Structure formats: C-alpha cells, structure tokens
Length: 61
Image 1: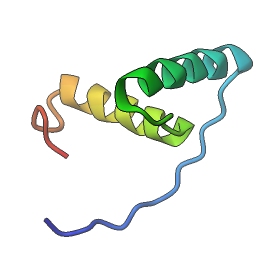
Image 2: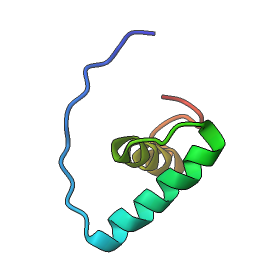
Image 3: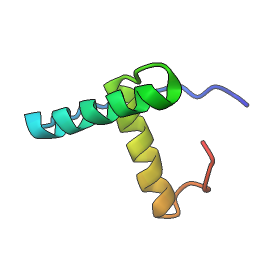
C-alpha cells in the first residue's frame, strides 16, 4: 500500500466536546494499552462518518 501525504485540518471545539473526547480516549486506553491522541480520535470519527455515508468501503482506509 502506498503512503498518502497527510494534510492538517484545524478544528475548534468547545470544552464540553473536548471533555467527551478525553473521556473516550481514557476508555480506549483500557482496550488498547495506550491512550490515543485527540487527533487519533477525530480521525477515527471522520473515518466512521464517511463509511456510514458510503464514501469509504466498510473497513477500508
């Protein structure tokens, strides 16, 4: 698989959403053994959003 160049996207979130994201990060720590970054969580959320809308193959990158 070829590596794709990544671009940065800046997103502003309120404190409530950041706290919810951080809660999810801690919960994910239990499952994976490492705490994912906020960027990891946001990337996963965008990926799931696109999959649900049929823009990405399910389970694909």
